Amino acid sequence: MNTVYVSDLDGTLLGDNAILSLLSKKVLHELLHQGLQFTVASARSVVSMQMMLKGLNLTLPVIEFNGAFISDLDSGRHEIINSICPSVVESIYKLILEFGCVPFVSSFNGREDCAYYKDVINDGMRWYLNDRLTSKDRRWRTIEDLMHSFGDQVVCLTVIGHAQQLLELQGAIIQKHGTTVETHLIENQYSPGWYWLTIHDCKATKDQAIRTLVENYGLQESEIVVFGDQINDIKMFKIADRAIAVANADAELKRYSSLVIGLNTEDSVVKYIRQDWSNKCAMKSDSDIR
Image (cartoon, rainbow, N blue to C red; front, side, top):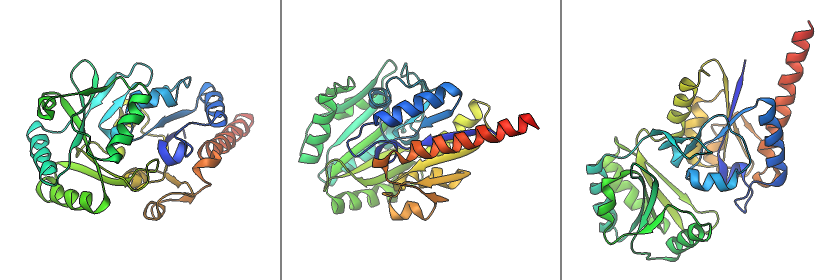
């Protein structure tokens, strides 16, 4: 049986500095050359992934924005787009304003990816914007009225603030649009104390994206092995044949794991894949000899 490996990025495949270590990159490069079926599923954009995974030849597309996009890593071309209904975007935007917050708007305008912003009202938002601009992320642009961006295919609204405020906002969104959108509330591990509430279309989940990828690439008979660390990985853990949490993973996610390995800072995901791949190759060689 073939195996497809799918890993989250931040807190899982990446170290605490949001960088793929030289060891992990080297091992993945070698295994991909040998035929390893590997990809990533992340809340990040493909633009961000391209910088982190530069030099890796992924034959499978990546899952970005938690499943809002399924995209080719090299070109950034989107194979699947799960955007939020424009009327729902407008309704949620009004709710966000009512709670005294301002979102970042991530979209595809038919030609390129965009990330719009207007007012930056707290240090959490400022950290994110500075991080993206420092990385020369080409998506970012200011806009006079965020509602002007709603003509694009909006795939994510990102609200950054304090936990209690965003928890109440999340509850209001779920109460009004719970069947049509998917929400995640997670602390930014690189800027502690600031929480991110992300809103996607209900079809934009990692499990649905993995199923789509498996079907589109004729991998239905393959074993699915996933790696993660946060609660937005729970759904993909539920559909996997093997669901593997890193030691630093959220306790709730570990409840759904079939195995807990080492820390993300110890190249644990890649070390596990290397050993698993080696075992499978050895079994295949023994089978061929017999």
